[in-house]
Length: 349
Image (cartoon, rainbow, N blue to C red; front, side):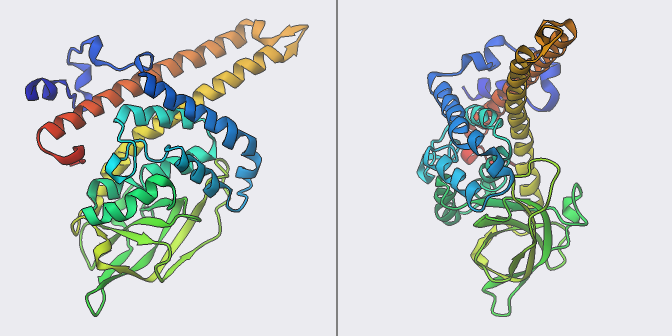
């Protein structure tokens, strides 16, 4: 059993050269009844809570995004991939991708949702101590607490490990004192929990910390005015002698860069899944408009040039969807293989 599972777990670009059985490739048409119910719940949620409030969301009406996330938490949408012992549903990676796709059509809400459930929550789930998981994960899965991820700085974006935010031990040895600046922080304006990356003393690599909003020494700049996703809270955050309890260090010293890279790797495929959801929404609206818009006495959907563009949309969406769900199943196979080798929960290595 171990051998067969290990063989089914594709690594990197191996899918290009390795023969794969059709039965090993997941396609959306094979979604279980439960997965279809989750997808429908996501559709209904957007129709009821997001689409009627788009103008208010873009205007960042105070408290609105938090309220919508609260309602998502009540339905369990924030804890789909969280283990049951921490208050989640414990579903597999593919099921989580289905939820990500269908909520991906939710404009700025999908950004807040993805940041909270992905880069904001997973560092604790994968790298936290049992005490940290018990304290934070149930509250994040329910939506009681909202999460953000603080990595990027004015002088370090893609080169994240060059960050200048520093952490030093307090004189009494009970706290970390963090000083630095982070920018482009999604959910920054309302998050209760920040995953903050900083270098301890003069370390070569980053370390990671769980920082609560009410810890002393945190200040926020005003909301950024963006060209798109205007309803997503995006702020600069300053840490000025921010006091963080020693037990809030996440994982080992110097392990922060590994955490950052692994979590972002998961975030990248989830972002692609959310983009598919947005693309499907755009395609649907495009067809509706083409059937309603009249020119020269008939709908523009009757003209070949428009039909070609609509068909091209459908072709590209289908190809991207097929790639995303094949990759999702490959990742689930890899997680299962790691579990069989004794790695708890398929934690990224």
